[in-house]
Length: 465
Image (cartoon, rainbow, N blue to C red; front, top):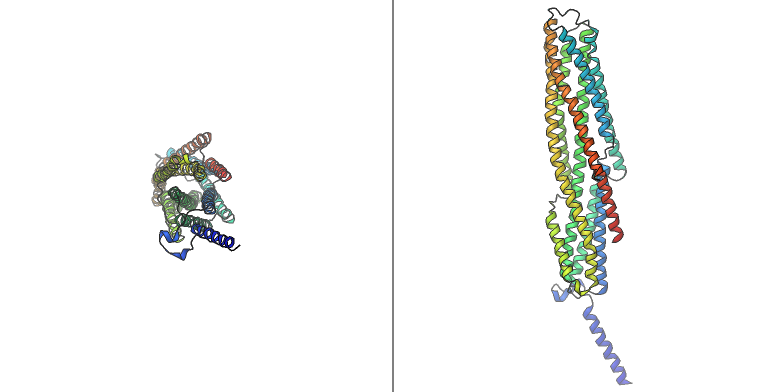
């Protein structure tokens, strides 16, 4: 009995010593490799897999938030472009009609020495009314779009997609992802095995894919805030442009109906101010957009969401290194390698989506800069042509009818040129926009279609993971 008891005790001691060799050492046992590392057990491998899957799912969740934020934060109705275009064309058409009438009537008296009957001419006097009515309609169109943008901003805030709410959400999401990545890396360092290199390669890929949605969020936020700011500034200035123009037409009407030439001074001054606003509106709205973009960048820095220069080629190279390692070690039929290979497709799909997204954004920036320059040029031309009708009106107040008629006639011809250009250019821009939308819709590349397609793919990823 004593020998048996002695044998049992020895066996138990040997078993305990062997088990202790594989136990996880606590963090305070030392800093060297021999003191704080041990082989990966089944439970530790499962923990690494669970953390990896959670990190990837949280990154996908952040991508989905970015897409919803892009939709809600810069919402534009399908008919907004057509609605605004139609009302502005009515504005330009009314102005065009009034100017043609005024040019025709004043031109008929251009060689008359006294221009008798011109001041009492109902047609000449009435030529001031259509432009005034048109500019009231134009101001109303600006007010509608200004209000709708404000309403959409309130709705976005209500649903949790304001700029401040989005920054908080993204910061908290990234902090959670970073904590999980740190926990995963700690497990890998403390428990090395023959697949540690593979796990470290996947860590690099996870960090790359952590930065991709951050870069996309920054892009979405800056785009949404700067675009809306530019629109709001444009509409606000355009309201004043139309208001001063309509007031100038009213003063011109009173100058003829009341036989008071000094009203032409007010009419000319208001028309000149309106022309100046046409010239500076595209420039100031662009500057406002740039200022808002800089403010948002500072806010991102305060939230530690600093700007990142994403290198999609480097991201792809890191993924290729992980893929090649898994393929070269696949002969071992290790389920851990198979698990990583099962996630490679998700990394690859996400990387390709972001590469296409950043490429489209680069092209959109080039188009946006080109359109902005065109708008500035058009504004300078049309605004200068309106100033060309305002200054002669002020000068005409000091002269008798024959000279005054010639000055006002020349001014009307000047603005008629600018209005005709504006009328045709707006039609050209809208026609091109509709053609582009039709082409993109047929190719399933409209922004709304691309967002829906990405959301569907992300949903599929979540189901598979």
